[in-house]
Amino acid sequence: MRHASSRTLPGMSKEAEIFQGFLRKNGLKFTPERVIILRLVFETHEHFDAEELFMAVRRAGERVSKATIYRTLDILVESGLVRRHTFDDRQARYEHIFGHKYHEHLHCLSCHRIFEFTHEDLDRIQASVCERYKFTPASRSFFISGYCSRCSPPPLPHPET
Amino acid sequence: MRHASSRTLPGMSKEAEIFQGFLRKNGLKFTPERVIILRLVFETHEHFDAEELFMAVRRAGERVSKATIYRTLDILVESGLVRRHTFDDRQARYEHIFGHKYHEHLHCLSCHRIFEFTHEDLDRIQASVCERYKFTPASRSFFISGYCSRCSPPPLPHPET
DNA sequence: ATCGTTGCAAAATGTTTGCACAGGG
DNA sequence: CCCTGTGCAAACATTTTGCAACGAT
Image (cartoon, rainbow over all chains, first blue to last red; front, side):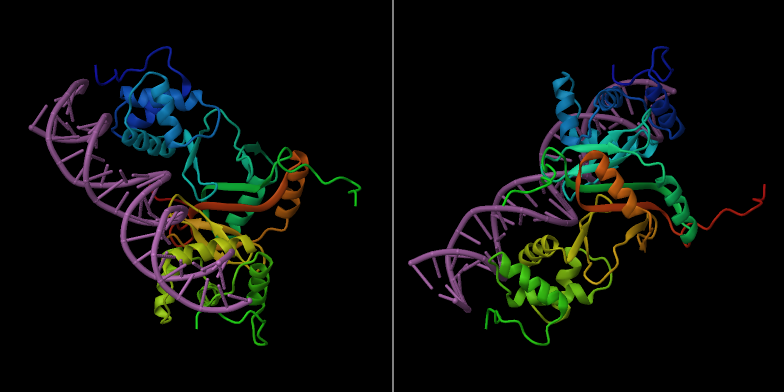
């Protein structure tokens, strides 16, 4: 029982169909390890890194090596189902994006939480910049680092002293 | 001849004055190594990484260890004279920012060149997002990855076949 | 004497790779 | 067979750290 059937199963999630299609198109296989990873990536509604995914796999009672985690994340990014971020200089972080609106990020330098936002003008700005530079965009990353409301309460209107 | 005078020299560049002020304010010293690094960082008008700065130091006939390069870059980033970027998952890249207009980046995935742009609406967008989330911004990073005009010529108006 | 700074080498971190073996088409 | 996939361990690249020595105050 190493490799899963290559036929599409009826109860398959939309992202699994997309992933399977991408794999097939590139002559790659829809293996049990890749299925496990896909499932856990789409069960996680946070940003995660490779190590966290590795631990989620173990927590789920499955076994997939770190090497396969990294190799599969690369494929998922290529397929467009997952986005990779490098918010600071530490390790890469990932999030699944299928079924989500495209969004930008706020990154709290104190508690390291990540908040998402959208702004309607950004697509227009990206398009106009790319036009100006004759640049063909593949992806963008807009994030603001700073301090969230919990970590940095706004200054009082009339500071004492 | 290890440590430089702590008095401000008359012919000192503006960035050196700022750096010295920052160091003094934090009980740190304006050492010859830091002076060398500061000079080379401000002589470089490209984005660079720690290794490139290390080689620039040797090329200049000076000797500063890698450890000191890293430690000093951290201080320069803290002082606000230098910006650190992690465009992709490779190593951190730096650029001096004193005396430059704030700008965003285009990053060519093929030739890895970096182009700079500004857009007048971005400050306003950042302010409105931060207001909405009660977020105190420290810095932002907006970059678009894709293919520059040289690496990806626009498709012909009437593609043959 | 104290305290921050340095260079060196070792350690730590995060990621990639070589390899031998497995298994489906 | 042939090809891709896997786990493991080793390799790798970048960055950080422990430590002894050093110099300015």
